[in-house]
Image (tube, rainbow, N blue to C red; front, side, top):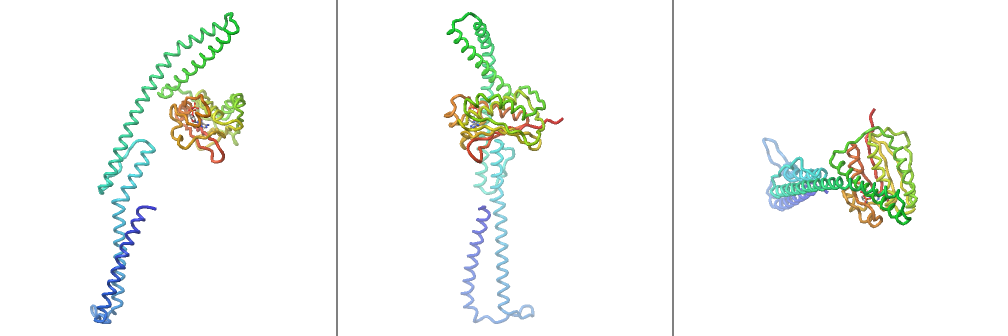
Amino acid sequence: MRLRTVVTWLFAGAIGLLFLFMALSASVLWSFIHPVLPDAITLGGAVVPAWALLATLLALLVLLFILVLALFTLLFNRLIVAPLVALTTAMATFTENQSLTRLPPLSRITELQELTRAFIAYTNGVEAVHARDKEISRVKSDFISTAAHQLRTPLTGIRWALEALQKDQLTQEQHALVESAVGKSRDLVGIVGTLLDISSIESGKHQYRFEPIAIDQLAATVAQDFAPMAQEHSVTVSVVPPPAPLPPARADRQQITWVLNNLIENAIRYTPAGGTATVSFAQVPDRVQVLVRDTGIGIPQKDRNNIFERFYRAENAIQKENGGNGLGLYIARTIATDHGGDLHFENNAEGPGTTFTLSLPVAHA
Ligand code: ADP
């Protein structure tokens, strides 16, 4: 119920009671003055019956009541409701943008002024924390980028050396050891490559190569690549072709392949055996969408706002899958927004699991 309605009703009730009290008092008074009052009164030459005079008086009183009520509502609106509404709007904008672009006007009421000042002080505090977080994150990214650059050369050297060693005459045991070392060094070179990708994407320095891409074909190929992993996890991966031909998306093939890999891999990893992962497509104005829906563990309400943050992993995901670094979705969303698109998710309305939707702009000829 709105504050305005509550106060108007309360005020109307109070004035109503006052009028009732006045009417009662008047009726008592009436019983005293009635015997001495004439039946009619002469006003400006005309004879007006006393009851008509009283009725007019009553009508005037009701009119006065309505006028006072309207005036009060107007004043109350100006002084209290409007500043509260402005403050609420400013709060909502701040929640959305994390910055206060327009200050809410100060009310004349002291308590509301204090509330507005407290809110402004709070937003200043939050903005300062954000700025500090950004700076920390920039320093961290710089460090990761430098460390990854430094690691890449010696690591590549180790991998080459191991691959050369593999060609030598080795015992079966030695061969197995070297092979395992080659595999691990490849993984390490891959991780370092990912770290470098992240820092270049994050710093906005990544050079995208946009081209028109048939997103349904690309997604189908990626899904196909996951067939062995899906089989290992006993999860059925299927691709539902679009009902009508899709326009090409404007995308960087390599980066979008990376995003699709991440979404489909997550759908398989976070779905218990026997579940399904379904890739489908949609078209909305100026955008094409890839939907990756699974019947998996879902994303708990308390984790919803953090899932796209770096290194964030939900508790249920950690329990289900040990491996994982919480970077995939962060990079995926950055890539999507760098394309002028978007990546978001919804827990499925019917049944368990989650649906991730990747939206990309349509490539215009
Ligand atoms: P990782 O999977 O390596 O942990 P991601 O950045 O890809 O990192 O995902 C971040 C987190 O988002 C996961 O740890 C998990 O909590 C959640 N998540 C991602 N995809 C799914 C999914 N399909 N179902 C349930 N949770 C998911």
